[in-house]
Length: 374
Image (cartoon, rainbow, N blue to C red):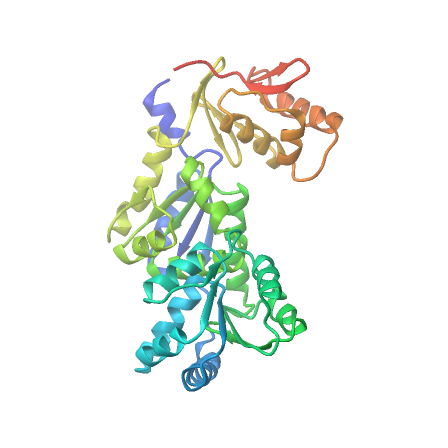
């Protein structure tokens, strides 16, 4: 396989999200010229003017009358709350007030933010869901307790209503409002793409873009899925600027590409990652295979695939040659499917591969990728 031909197909089938401000238009344009499908997502505007007076008032109320319980739902929101209090010269007073309250964290990121502020959480939800928090607090008892639920947006997950039904006096504290602008919705879609396997890379070209993207991912309960895809290598995370990288690390995400402050070389680094073997690949009977969201690269030949076919192949590749049962592959298809439906989906994948023998049937067990030892 020639290096020149490999470089020509480096970004074939790649969908790349570029979270950026206007300074990074060149990064997106460059990646697009080289063959990637690029989704640009500009930074949404925070409705700070609408929210600042309300947040200041709520902070003063917490300081003057510390609640019995504070539920911290997002790490970024809790940090921003303290940052807003610091700007008002009230951070020390807020910290002192919260020491008098019981703190409950919705997941590890919220817990980490509490610890960084010098406070201690009484309890942490293992699943990171509001449903788990609500069930725990109903059992613990919140009747006649004053409860503040810190949120990062207007999204209502039902936690406040559940606590009110349990007899608590509940007040929501919204730290930032993203609103429902087209920019916010566009960024939310790219978050879901990254989490669901519909994107191969996310490029953070500014700290403001990283902050917004991560906050929306946290609100959408997708950060864990983004992290898992990044850890397997199937989702490349790239950042430009020390501030953007620090925000990713704070969310326990570790970019494979960190270009410091060099915007100009960011597209080159992403191109090199996919063209020079940085993305995960497997040696198979048919050649070196690299799965992308838009298809599969077999040596230097790109084969486009439908989303469901690419998802099946991705799951088989992740198994590394192990057999996956029809039940396991049914889950990959996004709904409970019969064994016949899985067989039909595998048949469509084989047809799309056009004679490339990548899928082996293991009688009475399932299917495996035709992986051979390197």
